Image (cartoon, rainbow, N blue to C red; front, side):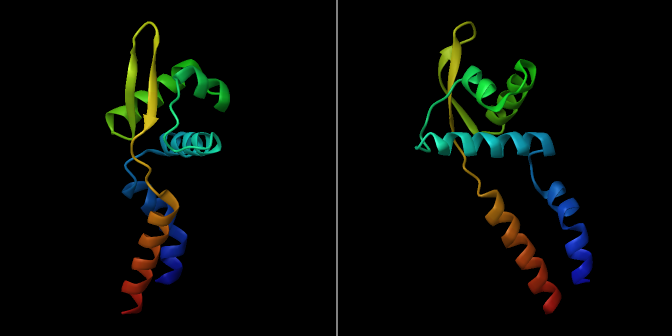
Length: 111
């Protein structure tokens, strides 16, 4: 059973995570980018992130819109034609959460 958890954990995790694969990958890249700026309160624009992460204009708009709707990002200011200023609202600790779930599953098997 432990081997089953090891083999299928990533599939299980994808079902648990509210962010789909590409959106999760983008969000993790975005968090890394913001942390490299030296401050978790760093404010950024779509254009800045698009250039830094080398993502298409359509892709960045979709990712940012989805993250705002899920309340991972916050729109701080701006307008449609002049652009928006964003910050990360919810810093989920993806690696810790994934590890905690894996540990819990293993403990349940041991019991």
